[in-house]
Length: 441
Ligand code: IFM
Image 1: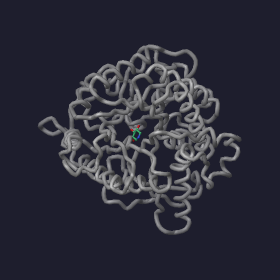
Image 2 (image 1 turned 30 degrees about the vertical axis):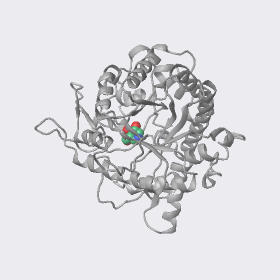
Image 3 (image 1 turned 90 degrees about the vertical axis):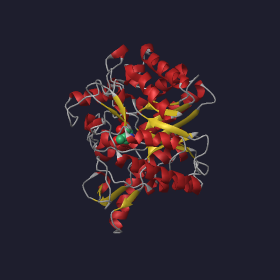
Image 4 (image 1 turned 90 degrees about the horizontal axis):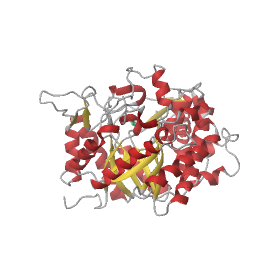
């Protein structure tokens, strides 16, 4: 394609996370994490667990081969904190690190750039037992973990992301209890967990920087534009509050070292002198996860007096999420206009659908193909608008363990048969492979 809006150096690939695909939860000295505890308490909706998941821990060579065959040149994976530091801090488990050594070497041999994410939700249980993200005691263990990971892999992994979606961890893990560790502490739990992730991130970024120079350091945020359900002032104010919680605490924290003014009063006992400087860091890359906009309404009695409004959208995914590709272009342009156009990459974008295996044994996932097409067009337009977008990684390579929904929600471009663990590329895989080759979009 001669007029491709995507630069030659563009990163194309997929994202995944350790807990969702690896399985092998007892292998090689791994310690327990909060999601193990949450699943054991019967909190996964379809009753499944991640004990085997995609068995990526053993089948990673096959998964790398799938990415290579698609022409992908980048892959974001997460390192499992409980494999590296089974107690959350303290003694290092070399066998856990050995797995990521093998994975990184395999990726590099296949010509795929590894992008490592340190925290994709598998908090070691011993740390949760000491308060988890609710206390600032977690900062030092996270910095130790970052240092240890960079010591082992920093000679080959150039791109390091600290967190994945801190607002989801805080809101659903500590506010509403729908995610591990299942705490239902409302506003205070949410704001504490958000701020302490920001603090831990700042310490981890500095720890890695001190360990290795020349690395690309960043983090991954799920930025979702917040809209009011209608133009009633109460709804507009509710959307602004939710935007402050969901988007601004993480974004303004790392990029500006600021607490959103709307939350300053509620956070005054959580934020200590000097914290603003500690959470700010001149990152090299911002990863953006985008799924949809959020439509909010005024709902007294809920945290921040905000509830979910009706987006009045034509299409929804199997998660019930509205399909709103223009929100991605909006968020990229907002970063360009209001945050100095930082280098960004799409670190996750994708959709779960009710996949059916056809008589030919393949999933012809036309809806997912349309989803990708529309979102890639949004990215292309944002690049034409002048946004500094460096890559697009779909969520996800494989069907996987979708947290509290278990194995029932399938996001992969490759189907996984959870009995045989056989991998079968879907039509969306072939579509993205064509895009990468410049034949589509
Ligand atoms: O599966 C998750 C992922 O772990 C984080 N971002 C959203 C995805 C889909 O819900």
